[in-house]
Amino acid sequence: MSSKQDLIRKASTIASVDRETTRRVIDAYHITLVEAVDQAQVGDKVELRGLVTLQRVATPERSMRNPKTGEPVLVPAGTKVKAKVSAKIN
Image (cartoon, rainbow, N blue to C red; front, side):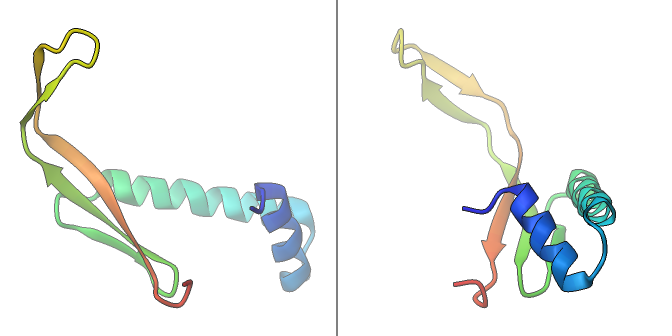
């Protein structure tokens, strides 16, 4: 598994720029991606071709059990992010 520092080191070498500039670009990319997903409506996709597609999906209200007490607990409806990795990565 590569760490963020490993990715920064490799990207800075490939792009022939210093590591600090590369780190700032990667951080900005991360912030932009998180904001795009946060602002997405249900059904909207954020696509990074050749890497991953992120889609905001609705989750229905559902009943679960408290594992400690066994009592039913109602989990409200909400949203989650579904990720589909590109076939190019496999």
